[in-house]
Length: 343
Image 1 (cartoon, helix red, strand yellow):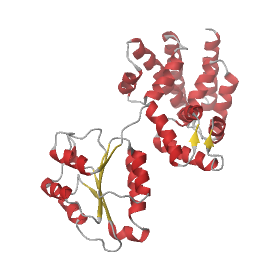
Image 2: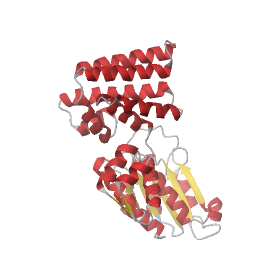
Image 3: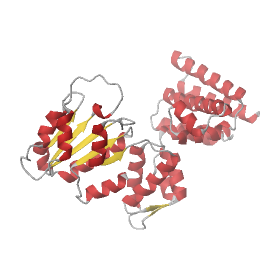
Image 4: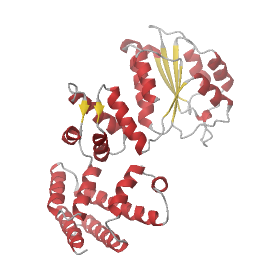
């Protein structure tokens, strides 16, 4: 739905009302930017663009702006952030809103204004009359956090949006390398699309060649190499991170976080929690749970307890200056490797 709306905006098929709601900030911000670049010319922005925070400004002030003719050009663009009256979430409202003014405007929106409601809330209060009326009149985008399948569909659709195809295997590799952040994924897909402009096809080899690995992904791979007894490859990743000026204390922190996640996923799975439930409980993306569950199968509870204790001790030594920081992580990696060999 969101990419369909973006295509319409790019074709200058502009609605007088938009409702953007949800907690995926990328989708909301991207839609705002698209509207800004396609509704107004650069020289019109200073005169015909307004942005209001409805936690600070009453809605009637914004409506008056929307009803004012453009100073130059044909359109005005008004973005209304934080429309708290659309949700049941408890907020400290600093202003009172005259919603009857908004209701009247929705019945007959000004043809020369584009009014965008940007509501960063998980849900709207569907019981409210104003919500029902706004959803009926406005082009609506639900900017929700995407699950794994939706992320894969997003990657394919974003590639198509750029006029290229992406193989299923390439989708998997891209997700594992870039993670689930839509800002990062979109940047990588757009870059890949430019690279394959002639052949119009993104495959695994191109993804592996061009996609930057996040620090977290490098650490995940490093941990994976250790538990599969590939200490040489693990150390090579570690030395590369040092060359990239990554701080040893940060590297250790992420290694520790990965093992804590593995332990938590293993424990919650034993209690009967499903992947989605674990993700919700730990407040992380289900895809990260899936990857951690795969690594959890390689460890017993005792082994994970031992590793976490070793990492906690290394953290203490690093913070108290007990040993050279870079050498300390090397020793930890060798200990984990030796522990894996004894299994």
